[in-house]
Length: 131
Image (tube, rainbow, N blue to C red; front, side, top):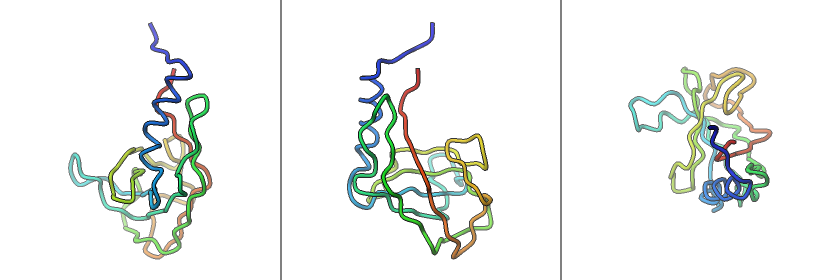
């Protein structure tokens, strides 16, 4: 049997996660592969999220507000492999994969971010549960 969730349950789960990011200074951080299990990996670009970071969940999905462009990235020679959504205090609420296509976050213009590059995010949604 396939597991399914009511819309109310999907909204509650999604809101529980994104509400952690509602304080000022929450961030979308693009990273290269972690050096060890449990390590967040090296940051190459940090984008500050709006306050609140996400609107209320609708049908199990929350949409992010405006995300500031970073015009002076840290950069790294290695390709971006994942991203984190975290509070201003660097508590990670979500970690997801990044690729050129078919991933949690799709990055256009290449996966390698050099020092002083510009990185922006045009749209971001989050859903805690499917089904």
